[in-house]
Length: 284
Image 1 (cartoon, rainbow, N blue to C red):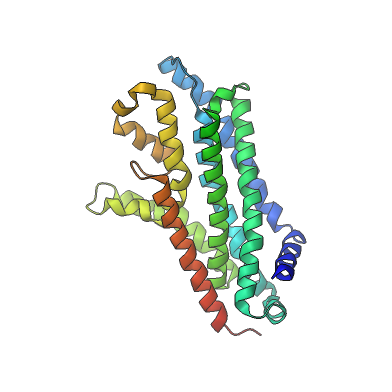
Image 2: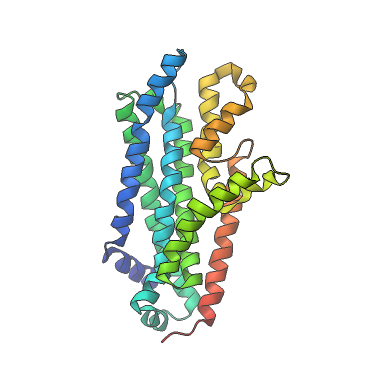
């Protein structure tokens, strides 16, 4: 297994895909973070607060939830890319049984997902500092920043391993890229709008994209409101939470750990599906 994992890392680092997908994560992280300064100025113009506004927490949520798609697409190419390049036969023949190949890819790509997650947190934090004029109050308390940052890193890893499972299932590079993009930015967006106010609106937090976003957002938004509202937090109107969730992801009243468990379930389903499909798929 160790040799298989090392082989996967060699495959990853001998191509440009890993850093090509990392570049937009860096840009999105820094860009989302730097928006905190103008937003803080806007808040101050409406109401002057006697406490720091931890917009860095929301920036971490925004950057993570926009960047995870790149981690997912990168993971999807673990198998789909090998099928496209016709190297999957050699991989399976040298890494028999096929389940061991899947396990090795999951371990190796989880490591790259970890790099993506840490990079996102660092650049979103750097952007927040720059946008806030080097004011560390933009992060809230150290515990809050560490909690939201850790959730962001975990989310990135989970999207990567879900991508590996999805790529193993479809085994087609075009579908592995197109289908996640269409689903996340079109299908689920339309579904979320349709579900608003419907009798089954409670289904929305359990959709894959919303669950993935909620791991970070359902932690960051309540922490942000708590830090800003202070002792008056229980009196904060629901509309405030819903507006923040609309822009930064997640769902009102839905705990982050429920989103985590839901998304882990989706990842497990795709990994199991990829394993079953890989066992039965003929190779040239």
